[in-house]
Length: 216
Image 1: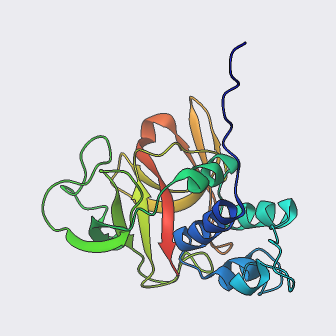
Image 2: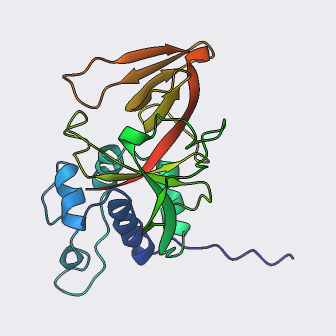
Image 3: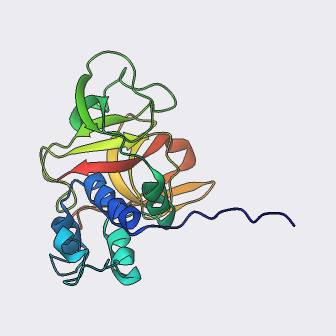
């Protein structure tokens, strides 16, 4: 009789580490992630991960679901964070968002190129083409504020609800939330309710890339 294959057991430490990494990707502490998720600020604290008599306390599926929603992350992302090793930091090209629309900073695929880029060490997104943009002004509050830095990953798949950077064929660069994408149109929701949503025809979009991390 064939010997059954051993199965990998999901551990308590892996799940909590994934939540810590989820918070880090969003530029938050564990308590900051809990508050953004509408939970008690201590929900994800290290002191809550073990009971008073030393037994492991697991996060509830509801709290994980709320944390994913609060960070615009998918369950696939969470699974990846469970399996990832600590990747440390990565030096990525840095450019001000206000300068991103001028010519010469990106190639036709939306990868950083040319001169004018600085460098900054930030949590590694695992994408060699990733770059960072520094937000200027308050037009994207409350999502992003003046001086926040976002990591953009051209190689990461984009889904509805993701925050994205879009460059139009006219050279305009904007940060929005993806509402809907079809073969003919791109529907974008403004991060600031004061500003109108945008709908672009497919031929108006030079490229679109997902925001995977923000320093806040």
